[in-house]
Length: 211
Image 1 (cartoon, rainbow, N blue to C red):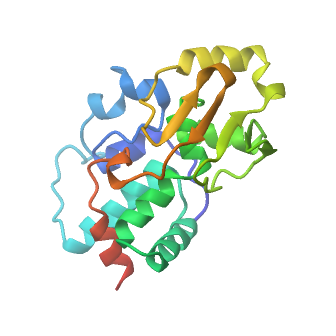
Image 2 (cartoon, one colour):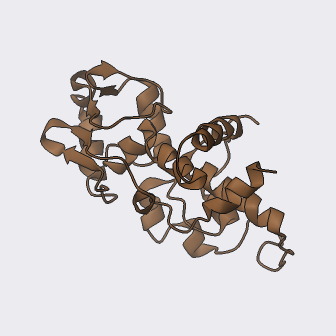
């Protein structure tokens, strides 16, 4: 499956909940889920499809994939790594996704959305421990420092963006934001409670991939 190029709001309507894929729009009355709280399509508002246990498993997987902006192959690889670690596989999966660089950039208010964060990372806007990183899936580690590269943050449009995005989302406790220096430190490893997608049953994803 290739890169999704359709409407981001459509993905939220398919899942029936806000996935915060469009930045400030998700917090306004322009949010598609607020305006049309039913699946897209001509019959979306009228037809109640029969739900099976498999469909519930599939929907949970799709919801998490779309929330973090991860493709199927990459998601399978993350799941495989999570299954090899000690602890609960489902929680390991979510914790690893939380520690992706694109998610970290978004959660410290350096980008409007995870998709926006991915674009900026690919264009070399950020450094980890002083070294330029342009891979959105890069997994940060304890005590890593993620910072805006000075050359990039000096642009006027970037300054305006940072001012506009300030306070868009709540910075989690495992990340320590240093707004004055345009940087953030991984102060601790995230727990299940730190995962911003609260309404998710990760055990269903484990069941799906364990078949």
